Length: 514
Image 1 (cartoon, rainbow, N blue to C red):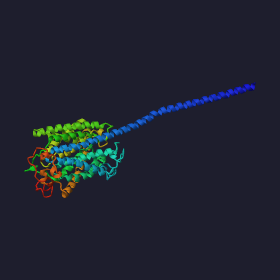
Image 2: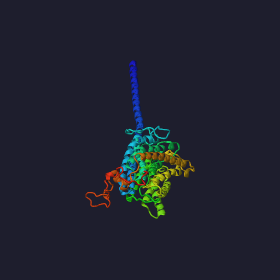
Image 3: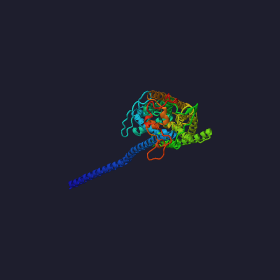
Image 4: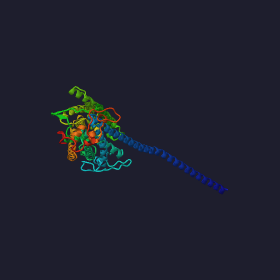
């Protein structure tokens, strides 16, 4: 009996131990499960946050890319503005050649800039910070960024960056021809346009946009291109104009004669299109939308244009007692050119000052230059003089915080009391002008000595539409048209297709040297 009791007691003890162990095991399992659930619950928000951050970054890149492409499209639409402006300031016999020139230049510059221009402007490596050395004939893949050090701050794909920078190049090339309207051979647009887009423009672009010496070492500021785009185009136009000479009848007995354009409403439509396109030109130069700086740039751009138009209107009235419509448009354009360089660096009040000064400059410039240079649309003062003023204005009005934000240069004289930034701007203007003028003059000289720059006197008097393209831009104004009853009073009797044949045109003293 005692043994049975002890045996039973031992069995109960063993059972209790097993039960305790089982209970402990269950608790461990419960604890393990509970701990795992707790850990999972803790990790899930972290994983979700990481996913949210990745999705947010992707959305940001997408938004930036859409903005850059949209801005580039606005800038490309400026070609229509240049076309309407030049058509309006041209005579009826030369309007067709203007639009043909715009489309052709946009096409040839697109191919040249894709082939080598973009690489020279923004490629890594290169020659002593003078010009880029990689990225030629780029083959863009979805989302590719390429090695573009100066614009690597923007995460948009390289293809978007290329398109945006290309349309800037096309604008600069369009500016060249405003000084040379109504007497230039059409082939000149192609022969000059290709090397301009491939090398001349990219050389200056690299210096002030692409991390070259003027930008990276000297700290010269040009946010969207007062010098890179506008002064470059105007300087090349000046070089061509000096070799080309004036239009027939512009200067007689030592005095300039007005040669009015045929359609001022079209010219002002061109101004409005350019004004509209500038909201892609300057704000788009942020190359992103997510930091919202582009909105500030929109405001200063518009204020400057408005101030320029008003100032030009007031100035021309004080001088001539007339409210010249063309001068109002030139005032707006000059102000837009001037605000292009400082648009990312200045406050609204400064934009009004910069624009107003540009409006005064363009009126005085047009009146003064017209005495010696035949510039039909006023491109030299509107893009050249205003471009110089806009670039220099950075040295006066740049806000130190915005210089730091953009990572180029320092504050202007009115904020820092230092002339350092103004000096850097002056060096940039001088270096760019000399470089572009020498290269462009040399290229135009070669073209002049080979194929010639200028049409014959007979072709110029009959109009480039018929002599270069075989048909007028306004046919019913010059010839009977089947189905119409209007008969022009003076229809040329010479076969249009023979007007450009060698020896068919008499010599003219004003064009003999061109």
